[in-house]
Each structure stands twice: as structure tokens, then as C-alpha cells.
Image (tube, rainbow, N blue to C red; front, side, top):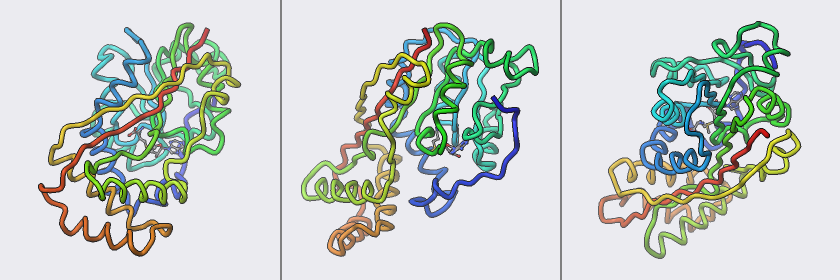
Length: 276
Ligand SMILES: C[S@@+](CC[C@H](N)C(=O)[O-])C[C@H]1O[C@@H](n2cnc3c(N)ncnc32)[C@H](O)[C@@H]1O
């Protein structure tokens, strides 16, 4: 474990598909608003009925943190991120934040310790639940972090790793749904949302692992329409998109109105990792 360093974030890898931090924040918030039920279903799978201490790794704008605070109102909750803007957004929501680069491992968490000795902390910090949603795949060195999380978890503790299995889908009818599929293929070709199967990595870190997928259909709300628009606007940045598909996405965005039928769906893969 490392003591809490304040580091300048290198988040270039985060924004390769994101035109700006405002858009990035908005997209994270829209995902929480539209597909919050999908995250909640992932948390349900963890089966953690009570927690004293909870940690959100790569907390972003707080989608998971808000869910965790609602579910475990009496727990001490610590949000870790290395992006000062994200930390500011979290801080404004009243969360305890730690600025740390998770590639340096798990920082020492104030409030979970009765000693400043990191080695003792690694063996004894009573962390019951660690949450990592769409964050691990940003790390260059997840193995180190994961073995430190394993050591920091209390007996019976749980680490939840969640990733989008596919980008969220919105269009209900053909030919739009096929266009959306081709946009997703172009995005995958450019490495958007690229993540490994975390099972072997978690097992090497010492965890027992259950992997499953959960799909949520969201109602068609103004936020869902805005979220759909955001994704299609992003697809215009894809070099791998054909000229014809680029034109079709531009047309779609121009006419994006209430008469385009949506069926918003999100699927997440969840790895529930337990300490024996
Ligand atoms: C895609 S966002 C996910 C945010 C949030 N967990 C959610 O589900 O909405 C990834 C987050 O991980 C953070 N992150 C990326 N690399 C990191 C690192 N090396 N150390 C700490 N945080 C990191 C980013 O700043 C960002 O807030």
C-alpha cells in the first residue's frame, strides 16, 4: 500500500473518445440516471447485507458512490480517484475523497486504520466492500492494486468489479439498430471500453470469483434521449466509421426527436470476488 499521494493525473487514455471533461462528466451522470438500475443489480449480486467500511475505486462523478451511500448509510465510504475534477465533484456531494493513482496500489485510507503502518493496515483494515466500476481497465498495473485490495478486505469481504459488456444500446428498429451495431463495432476496433476478462487476474490476486452478466432495460425518458444523442455524437469521432455510416449518424442526430423509437438497454459484466 502507498500513502496518499497527490499526483497529476495522466488521463489521456480516458479521453481518447471523449471530447472534453464536461462531456465526460455528463455522460457518467447520464449513465447513472438512465442505467442506475443496472449498477444496482450488480450490487445486488454481491450479496453484502451490511458493511462497516466501503471503498469506491475510480469513483468518477459518484454513480457508484451514491448507490453505495444509499445502500450502506452507516458505513464509512471512501472515494478514490486521480482526476482533480472528479474529486471536486465527489467532494461537493459530501463524499470523503482520496486523491491517488491506483497504479501505485491501494492508498492508506483514513478512517479505516488505527495505525499509520501500511503493512499492518494491509493485513488488518476492516474494509467490507470494494467497488470498481468501469475503472480497472484504465490501469496499467491492476495486479498490484488487486492483491492489495485482497489483503485490505476483512474476512468475508467482497470486491465488485463491473464493466460495460457492450456499449449501451438505444435504437429499437431497423435500420437504425444495425447502424448502431456497426458504430459499436467501429468503437471496439478503436479500443473503446476495452477490458480483459478479470477472472484470471482476480484469481491470481487470491480471490474466489463469480462472473455474470446483467441486462437492464430503461424507460424512455428525456435523459435516455440525451444519453443516446451523446453516444451518437461520439461515434462521429470514430475513424473506423465508413463515410456512409458517418452520414447516417449525422442524419440521425439532425432528426433526433421524439419520433425515433428507443429501447435503451445496458449490459454489465460483474465479477464478484470474495476473500475466503
Ligand atoms: C469511466 S470512469 C468510471 C467512474 C465511475 N466508477 C462510474 O462507474 O461512473 C473511470 C474513473 O477512473 C478514474 N481513474 C482512471 N485511472 C485511474 C488511476 N490510475 N487512479 C485513480 N483513478 C483512476 C478516472 O479518473 C475516472 O473517474
